[in-house]
Length: 153
Image (cartoon, rainbow, N blue to C red; front, side):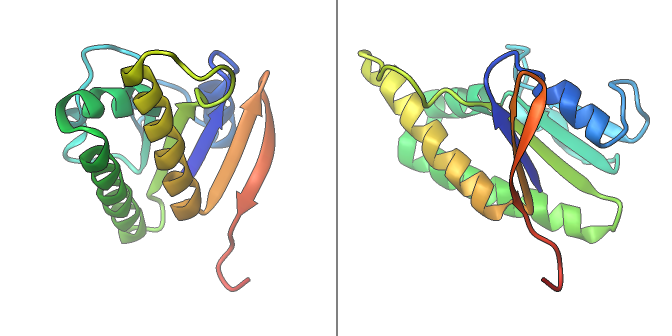
């Protein structure tokens, strides 16, 4: 799994598409964007294309918090990442790309629900980074490689 984070509107999707030499219209790409407010996780089953890109992880987390609460949401994403990684390992060409904007910096929100969202995003991003074989931060369209794990190393 490849986890990509960084600021909002900093070119994360564009960088990922360029890195994997894909376009939005690519036959190989299945894109699920939570930046579209009507998106639901049920939209990904089954995964039929070799590259699955989930973007807007922070909004997906927010969506789950509303219905599940913080503890169940964290457990949900732990399980989701396990399932995505398991799918990725089924075929050599399978690739999971998870993209989420960093909302954890700056002023702590006053509203309790916004603080819970911010906290959940931080905890779930830690989980994503830990489970990923590659982690990049994108600022202004430029990547900063934080983690790259290679087999046999």
